[in-house]
Amino acid sequence: MIVIRRENDRLLLPVRVTPKGSVNAVMPWKEGDDRVQVKVSVPPEGGKANRAVIEVLAKTLDLPKRDVTLVSGETSRLKTVALACDDWESLLQRLAGVMKASSPDTAFRVDSPG
Image 1 (tube, rainbow, N blue to C red):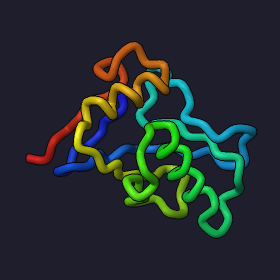
Image 2: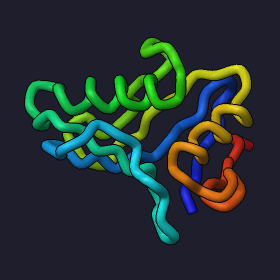
Image 3: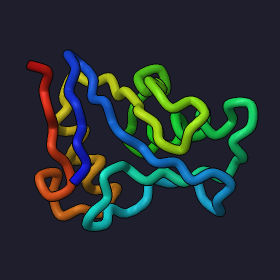
């Protein structure tokens, strides 16, 4: 299960990046995944992979690029990405659909601060 933290009007999404792949895509969810798997075709040089991850997530989730920001993991495959949104339930539905999870409740747990 992927634990997503909710912080005010944004979701903090744990991501695992695979650079230099053959596709730019959010990969299907598998039982036991604890991060969203994102593949990008560019190498991890000079921030190229980070920019590609932001572009892939923004396009896939139908968000403006300005609403997708890297929070941590700039030089690591394990990253945290913030998704700004007003309707986080709808956003989780879209993400679950892209990841081919049966439902958001199957793949995600959302933790609120407190």
